[in-house]
Amino acid sequence: MTKHIFVTGGVVSSLGKGLTSASIGMLLESRGLTVRMQKLDPYINVDPGTMGPYQHGEVYVLDDGSETDLDLGHYERFTHSPLTRDSNLTTGRIYQSVIEKERRGDYLGKTVQVIPHITNEIKDCIKRLATDDVDVVITEIGGTVGDIESLPFLEAIRQFAIDVGKENCVYVHLTLVPYLKAAKELKTKPTQHSVGQLREIGIQPDFIICRSEHPISSDDIDKIALFCNVPSKCVVEELDADFSIYEVPMSLVEHKLDKMIVEKLGLTQAKEPELTKWRELLHRLRHPETEVTIALVGKYAKHKDAYKSVYEALDHAGVANSAQVRVLRIQSEDVEREETRALLEKVNGILIPGGFGDRGVEGKIDAVRIAREHNIPFFGICLGMQCAVIEYARNVLGLKDANSSEFCKETQNPVICLIEEQRKVVDYGATTRRGSQPTCLTVGTRAASAYGTLDIAERHRHRYEFNYDYRDRFIDGGLVIAGSSPDGTLVEVVEIDEHPWFVGVQFHPEFKSKPTHPHPLFKAFIAAAVRNRRGNIAKEQINVADE
Image 1 (cartoon, helix red, strand yellow):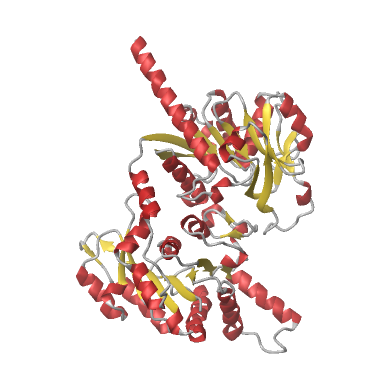
Image 2 (cartoon, one colour):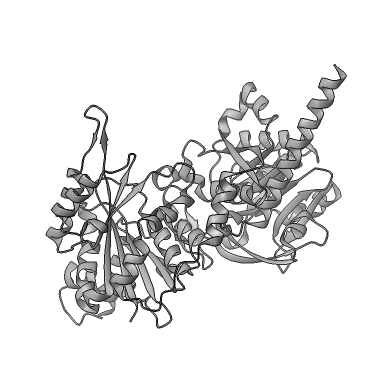
């Protein structure tokens, strides 16, 4: 029978349940087990696709087009678990499904209630992942124990152990052990209260993982164990990672969490963990040979989680190039300031990520101009590519009013326009061009060189596209169409030949980057940034010698 691990959180939100869940999944995979991962979110939105980045962070897109929670990015980066629409369920999805069944008459005239109908729907969603080829399903419950909206999910996982047998389930509870500077001591009471609330619901955690800024003494570990009714060895310290989130799994290994979970669930087929590649990754992260500075120019640059996967993909590419990547986060509106433009001229690379809406777009376009004119390696993603096309049209082709019809419906030169399939769309939720789409690359381009193949598939999330009516004009003006849809009607990749490295893509390559398998475009971009840095150092040395 498939085993189940349920991960809950207490005391405060944003403790890192997603990272912890992903780390547990990675460790179990290192033992030869097959893992599936899932997150259940308590908010009423059907999915996070209509939520702003300041509310929710990035929207993570899967191959099947699902718009999901950013924690699924951690799942894919840490594990090989295939993720689908069933990997992220919300209260909205659950209630939508139940109401549809009620409208069809599936409940045969019964009164539809939270228990059993909502909780049964939740349990069915968990069971859907427990196929015959899966050893362990890890289900993360979003929110914090004590929140009203989380109660149906907690009740469902309580019932689940009754349905499949407690011997087939493990409950992991992640809490905060805060440090009071005035008293100079850690406080275990919040953890005791959080576990107390879980036990009132009927869930006794098997393992308690304690997030803390300071080491937790054995006395405090014993106190938590005593008042929370678990053995002391099952209270696991998880200190804030000093250097990288990829240190988290090794911290859990040191406390033997994976070994205890395997024993608790009776997973006799599990092997000893094979972590050689992961240790090599951490070694390369800690010992870079050089460093580069990349300016990320975005309208949500103040909120780090808005571009979470981009930052991770840059780190992965840094490891591949033995370079530490320092990201200079620049709010796109600030590019209008002279001191910000001066900063951009000195970085080793400029990256413009995706986004929606016209706020800050002119700053992004100006950042593209700086990258193009100063021969700074440039990488444009989704809206970043569209800004590159607009800038090229204005400043190279001479179409001074060139724009996107998203930002200026009256423009005489809509070089970026709404794609045909979007023209009759009214609702905003789950209506963009999404998910894995094929692209045919052009022989001899930088993109083709990076991928090492001409046929690729990448994840998309957008409504606007390169206007095909302008294709020939751009080609005649020197812009390289480096990738198109198989039928040739959609431009997916653009490049500038004379530039050291200038690539714009309509898709989101950051979603397919892993620490042990960096995305080829990010890898090539950082390699170009390293060359840029070395070239700048050489110029400085020549200038000093001349003086």
